[in-house]
Image (cartoon, rainbow, N blue to C red):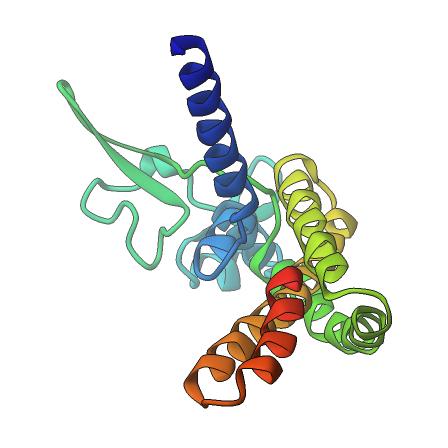
Length: 219
């Protein structure tokens, strides 16, 4: 008896963990914080200045006499009071027993803000139309359950690309899979709404059974 109960509890906890894994979907503002590297963004900004005068006039840029290039001020030289403010957003202040230090903020993905906004995010916008045109008729002709399962697969692909993707192309495909998830979720929400309507508005029991049974089997 104890062995059977332990086995059932293991299956339940396993299913809960699996569902938590599938419920993952990146959202704002956390996705931007994950993709954008503030230091790379500032390096791209400072790299646009070609002479010492224009470079030093724009915080946090500083002209290097060694490389003859404009680059962001090193976080180690930024005063503790300014560390992490709007000018030095690529720096983070850490408190230690010996005092406060200013260090570079950790970057998960090395993309600039312009790359994320101009080359990555637009892919999710343009991917909606083909997915709606394809998934809608496919779900209607075959099965809404299949569309939901396809959406689950999209979550797995999205997580894999976010964890292991390094190039802009990987992140563009990640945006496509997010559209994939959202379109499939639409079909799942439609089934929930139909179930609600079947109970909200009374109808003959035979007709209600004919409507609710296939909806439940899909959902």
